[in-house]
Length: 99
Image (cartoon, rainbow, N blue to C red):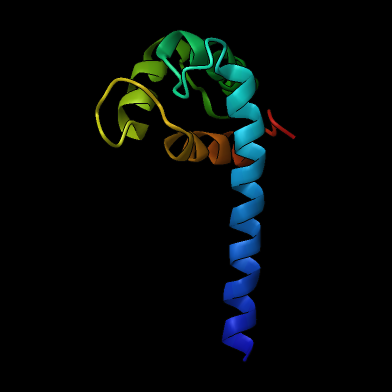
């Protein structure tokens, strides 16, 4: 029973993370295409990078392409919601951009 409770708690945390990521995703998806293109992500990634730059030395100009490439699981050049959750979670953990 204890293992079930741990797994259930993790599922609830994940569901909350996805729900919060969806809110941020919808705000960023300016053209309402259901995907985030590089231009839509650039501003928030630069904000996140400038916030953590003082702590970990992130170079915003060179890291955006790499971040997009590493999270674009199906390599279609666009970020879907579930791909965005990875970025969202990292931003929360590192800097609290989307608190």
